[in-house]
Image (cartoon, rainbow over all chains, first blue to last red; front, side, top):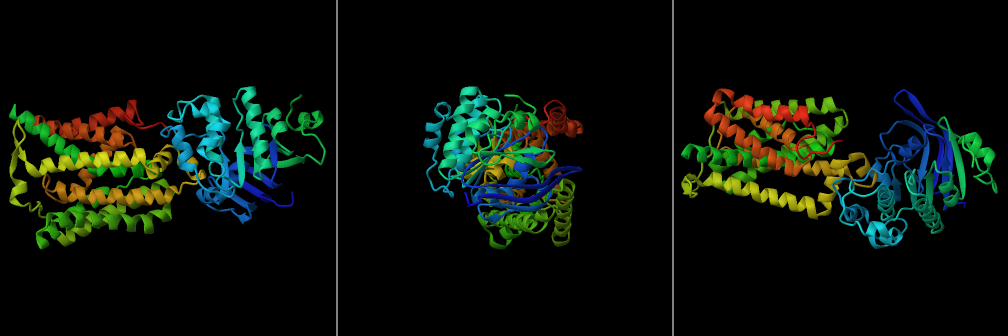
Amino acid sequence: MAEKMIRVVGLEAHYGLGHALQELNLHVGRECVAVMGRNGVGKTSLARALMGLDPPQASGSVELLGQQVLGWSPHRIARLGVGYVPQGRRLFPSLSVDEHLQLNTRKGPAGQQWTTSRVFELFPSLGRRRRAYGDQISGGERSMLAIGRALVTNPGCLILDEPTEGLAPAVVEDVALSLKALSREGVAVLLIEQNVKAAVLAADRAYFMAEGRIVHETADGESMSDEAILGRYLGVSV
Amino acid sequence: MNTFYFLTLNGLTMAALLFIMASGLTLAFGLMRVVNLAHGAFYLLGGYIGVQVIRDTGSLTLGILAGGLAALAGGLLMERFLLQRVRGMDLSEALLTIAVGLIIADALLVVYGGQPVSLPLPRELRAPVDLGVMMYPYFRVLIMVFAVLLGIALWLVMTYTRIGAAIRAGVDDRETAMAQGINVPLLFGGVFAVASFLAGIAGVVGTSYMSLTQGLDVRVLMLSLVVIIIGGMGSLKGAAVGALITGMVSSFATGYLPQFALFFLFLPMTLILVFRPQGLFGRTA
């Protein structure tokens, strides 16, 4: 786990008057790491800051795949080999399922192993909707397509912002397990997640956020489904 | 009945010119939410340069190309050296394009004077052809054919090519397109250049229909904006339908009720703005 594919040090970000991220440190190697926290603690701000979206006044250090990317344009970060599944999927209504995948298919840090047909193997129901447009498919299919669209870029690291939101439990499990499998293939997966079950299934370890900071990091051997931790940082009981 | 056919054909000619003007403009508008208010000045620039080249060389084809290239150069320079510096500041962008438009139009006034200029067309293109219902100038028929072919070509590019898909993605959701690795600013530069080229071409061929005069830049710009607002920003289909509506209304209103021409021209736009602000074929952001 020595190699750090995602390395964030002292990241501070302001949006308008709000202070979204403070002194934030985290790192991800070739593993799947979850970021958990309640609504509004800055999880999405973190994902957006990593992708260079609406560049806030950010300072600190964001290293993705060995490059210092703070201040880079989002398309340059994506082309570096960073896959991104935005919150709310953000599919293109004017593009068909096929077009979403074809437009993004490229050789990336992960080589060329992810293709349109492999995405359809992973998500068979998506394969049956190839000609449907981005706004004509079901919620589950939207998540699958948003993930598939990131996979065909053959990313070296993958940032997912609540990919399982609104999915049926069985599908949540599929998605979680495929993310875990992906990290075993050497992709760094940063999974921002509210769904504890998905996070536990997919992730090797977890960070917990509150008020724009990382407030807890699971130690070696510490379970992220530990009731005390979940109760304290998420306010849930399992 | 003859008047009716004549106004219909004039409406179609106007629609063809407006489609050539608006098709590129609407895609550029959709991509970066920047509306180029110098687009009318590019029309004028293309027109004057094109007429000059036709007079000097006697070649209509060269003149049309020269007019397109002059506007293309103007568009490229403006996008590279001016627009990029104020990117993301909506008001500055709009004001900048107005300023460039005024400067170009005034420069043209200095160089070419204020006398109306018409297109020196060879006799065989000026001659009317029999369209079955009536005789109509051959060159105007060619303009309509060109607009239709342009529409088909643009539609094929938008539907079947990777660049077309990238443009559609960028129009749908610029931010997400960028986060998926699409270089939207570069794409915008390309579309902007093509749109300028088309405005220049429209300026040359349109001069066979409307003489080049001061103030024409503002008139064609306004009509193009009406087309885009009716059709919906970023929609090619919208530009086609918007151009047809605007061209027909403009022709018939001018023919039958000239004192209400502007009223009828802006009425559909106003209704659309109130009841369907995204336009007939636009998507809600």
